[in-house]
Image (cartoon, rainbow, N blue to C red; front, side):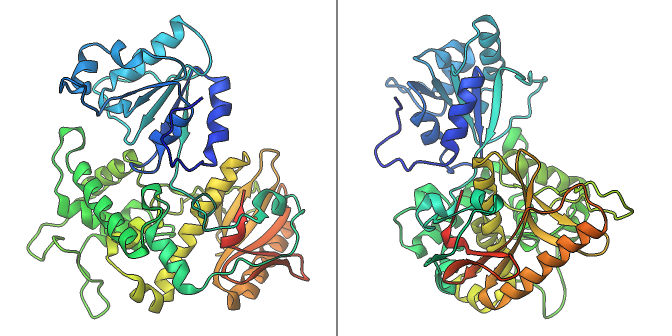
Length: 442
């Protein structure tokens, strides 16, 4: 079974896709362009139709399907329809077919943007299940050994394990090149060039989405602001303010083609529209806030932690290279945190869990909260250097004490520091588990 081409690298999300196909008539795989949706879908399909392809007679498939949607829907099941959003009425056609001819695992749809339909599209509830796909984790790309299981950490079953440390230069290379399947096997310098080219292409696509012209230089400004605010609690007002031109010696370098002093400021509504466009292109993957259901007066923050869908996009937007990031560890630390949180989201979803962040009115923060389906949860701090492990562990212990004092619904069942530059995984005397990101897996 499966149509995946030779060289397909298996993904952790495959199990979730199989589970969804057993429970629903169709599954819609959503995620950014170039993250591997098509190959994932092909691997689980018996037939396929590519909306963006041209047939043997030179006829555009999109035009054919626009005239007769059945052309895209015929084939052995599970049947893949790739980039269905190019003909939005396909969604309702598939949903209607599932109403008339019920069955499980009949269709797989893939899409790299969410269409803004001229008329409402039926949700597909009960028939089509949406499945969010991310770029590759370090474990999937072969850059993490996966010796240490996230699930076993949460269950209190993880043990000491040697090996797995990485030096700073290698970590920076991994972050710059990102988790893009098409980059595997390329030298790291070429991977960085590839990501920059990808971002230029997706900005161009954003500038014409829905047939509405948007100024590319302004899109770059908003993208750059999102990059500067990577892994931070930032609202749209901050992004809007950040699209101005800072004055002074600490002002960041401008991108080529970005707004000049003669350009008009970007309006708040325009910034909101651009963020919506980036969301619909699956370029943003924010981390929601965790609510421990405290029975006290502690106010828990609700703002999301902002992430681009892959940390390499932020680095490409800022046009910073390996040498500069290696020297500016404060800036690199935000992108390293984003890479770790990308991986944690993938591993969490693989074990049926969800990832959150925590911040309350006292300023207490936790980088990552992983909540299991049974309600148990773990608190995780992310530290680049081994010299920061003690600081991260103490922060977690203080957080757990705070939860106990304020009578939270529950307290974390595990405390963990995910680190970049440490050469082993181990349990500290205080019970905090330490694991290198290059040893972590689901």
